[in-house]
Amino acid sequence: MNWSVIFPLILFLAIIFIIGFWASTYLKSSDSFLQEYFLGGRQLGGFILAMTMTATYGSASSFIGGPGAAYTQGLGWVLLSMAQLATGYFVLMVLGKKFAIVTRKYKAVTLVDFLKERYESKWVVLLSAASIIIFLFSAMAAQWVGGARLIESVTGLSYTSALFLFAASVMIYVVIGGFRAVALTDAVQGTVMFIGTLILLIATVIAGGGIPNIISDLTAENPNLITPYGFDGGLTPLYVSSFWILVGVGVVGLPQITVRAMSYKNAKSLHRAIIIGTIVIGFIMLGMHLIGVFARSVLPGIEVADTVMPLLAMEVLPAWLAGLVLAAPMAAIMSTVDSLLLLVSSAVVKDVYLNYIQPNASNQRVKNLSFGVTTVLGVLVFLIALSPPDLIIWLNLFSFGGLEAAFIWPVVMGLYWRTGNKYGAISSMVVGVGSYMIIHLYFPNPFGIHTVVLPILLSLVAFVIGSLIGKQRLQESVHIA
Image (cartoon, rainbow, N blue to C red; front, side, top):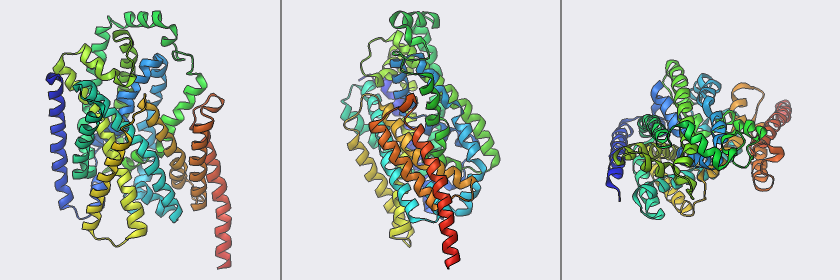
């Protein structure tokens, strides 16, 4: 083991645990366990809101899978990844104040709370909770794999041992501290991600002999690596432009992002978060994906693309600095895992158990159940992650697509279209998720566009038609009554 690399990582984890334990004191003193555990008491300031969105969105997919895909595809993947530049700005502008006002009015703690109050339908709640549990499992598995790959590359431990070490670390501070621990550690992690990206990008360019030399190496290996179309020409203009639906517009429908838009303190915090979040996300996405491409010149022939980031850091940096830089992907992965764990836990505890099984459960009962469910979910994801795919980015993007197909229109139209009702929401979810699964399995990338585009369009049509038919039915039932 290279202790010069490992020690800074251990120090970083120690800081995260201290924050988690400190945040747990708020759980003990809070009047509302649910508000505190799942929303941090709605007290996020602008900087922390921006960093928690950045750290949650910038996950193993960005720091492990993203550079891995860029290593394989070339500069075309860098161009494609920059569709994410406007994500934070877009999400907070579309949801922003209106979503926060409405969710406070509904006393909503989760996205499903909002949907329950807005559509007044048990089936909307159950479909939402099922979608969150199914698709976020694959997203969490991707993060678990990313964390294990990182620890495996740095320490030389077996994949299984590395996976166990990572899972145990995350579980301890998430179960103990809840959302406030997640948001505060995200602020630390987001800062580490930004600095780590900058250091590694500069070191990679120097190790490659400068950008002109790196581009010459890439051109000599395969001229397609420096074009917008990928190493095999598969990144067509239609596919790249439609990919923005998945990682740009559609992100409005991701529960792990929408919950951030209901947790900030005031309008000033929101405006500050929009500016900081856009700058930080843009820099990290550009930097990490460029690092992935440039690594092909510095370290050619890497077989498992997901190990590019840690192997490169240990190659081009002094050991102690590599340890600090590798805290960045560890930060990204942990910050996403903790958010997803809380989301799935809240779907089980708040959206299903408290709504339909035991509405009058005591505060202590809810607390014990929340801790227990979060722990069980972590163990289940650990078991799933024991058999990892070659590139975790596909696992992550699959879950993105499924969640967006389920939620984007019930959320957006629920805010901005009064005629929208439970019939439209149910139709949208069933058609969106159903068509996404069918197209993903049997007709991937139809007509050269990304798989998620058609399901999102079909779910919009289903929402509008379902709501109009539902409006008529609701009016008829009123007349009959």
